[in-house]
Image (tube, helix red, strand yellow):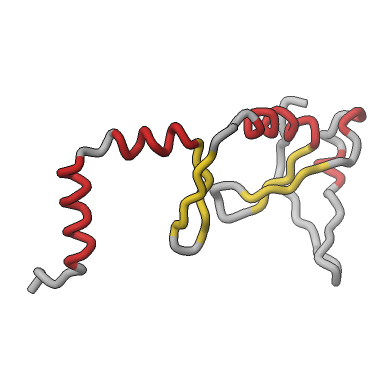
Length: 111
């Protein structure tokens, strides 16, 4: 499969289920079957992956050995540990101190 084309509307039943529109079913290769993984991405929507498309993504995700979980107000971010530490190593202590002062001032110096 090279990708999906189109946009189709569907109706949810009382249990929150929907049928995959025939226009998408026709685009699925026979060997892909009816197995999918649903996942939340960066956009404000859910993503439905055919299992064949999900498996390479999962293989990449499973290669992350060490991770850092970071609180970010209304969500928790998952970072590759080395990339997270590199981010903070790239910020000078002066720049970090300046940012902290700006945040802690909370607009008190503005008039």
